[in-house]
Image 1 (cartoon, rainbow, N blue to C red):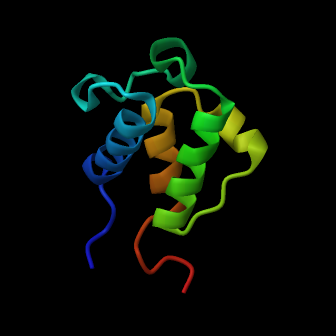
Image 2: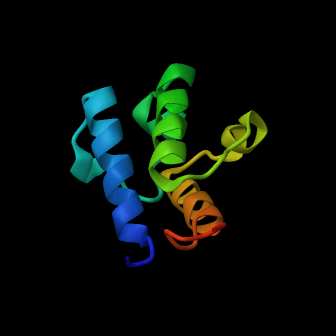
Length: 89
């Protein structure tokens, strides 16, 4: 298996947010802010965190999630905590 890439994580986030928030996935960039730019509410962010946790086998506390304000920050978190598909085994 190959390691997770920024592009693959961005793709998952784009797909999730485009579906949940009814926005154009192409407009979701790493600099996109969840609340200010996408008007995501706490439930939207909760479902995104759940998908990231399930997909990448990571855990994100409420405090950590509250500090992730942009798509790029979410990607950084995923890549730091799921460095490879076999991490932690």
